[in-house]
Amino acid sequence: MKLSRAGFLRKMAAEAINVLPHFVPGLPLLNVSEPDLHREWIEIGSVAQFKPETLTEVNQKQQIVFADYKGFWALDYETYHQGGNSPRRPLRIEVNGQLSLNPQESWSEGDYLSFLTGNRITEEEV
Image (tube, rainbow, N blue to C red; front, side, top):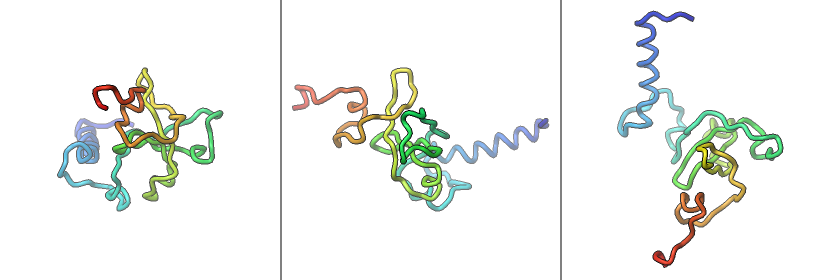
């Protein structure tokens, strides 16, 4: 498909209008469904694919990666678009920057980054 310069600029402007509200507070959200407006978390990536040996009832379908104040999660694509947020699988950030399944389903209510890195309460914090 060949775009003229004006067509390209229109396409880029349309993309910016859809993306900017997620980064600039106060801008109106266009093309956002009603369930999306009431979420306390945001989609951070497109689709998560899991290795066949890690598939369960929860993650056997196509997954969306999203984040909230507790960390990163993978959620069933259909559930996501219906406005739900469970069941979901916890993800962790690997040293190389990739997201992978977190084998531990839950963690303390403390700092999620400390949970990811293995840092526990130090003597100074006690």
